[in-house]
Length: 126
Ligand SMILES: [Zn+2]
Image (cartoon, rainbow, N blue to C red; front, side, top):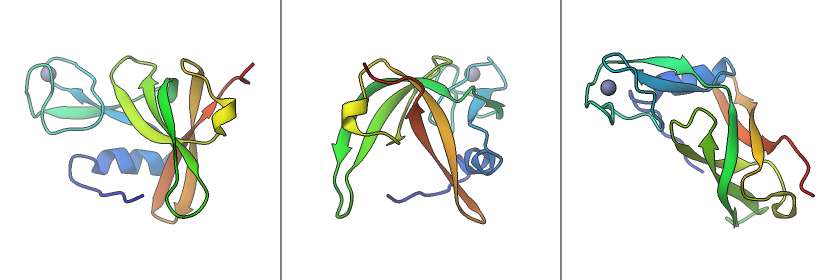
């Protein structure tokens, strides 16, 4: 998986390094949105700052991905704040997952200057 850092997402990646999940918040109308983008989706303002999210979410859908090595689960996570969805790696096996289950973000420091994140179920699938 390839990650690119642009001006739009720089603050997001810096937040990860401090183990915080950040989302842009419009300075004009207060809208919080995800993923980061240049304009507020509500009022189109470019003025924004950043706010910390709870790091909690709900599994909206998922798929098992095989790229060469070990298969992994890629999920669509509905953020708890209702501000959007993100596509992320899920640290669980397919048989442990069910749509709508609660997830919590977990951080992985993979290098001095790079922290990635995964989502883990907070409950066991019954
Ligand atoms: Zn706005």
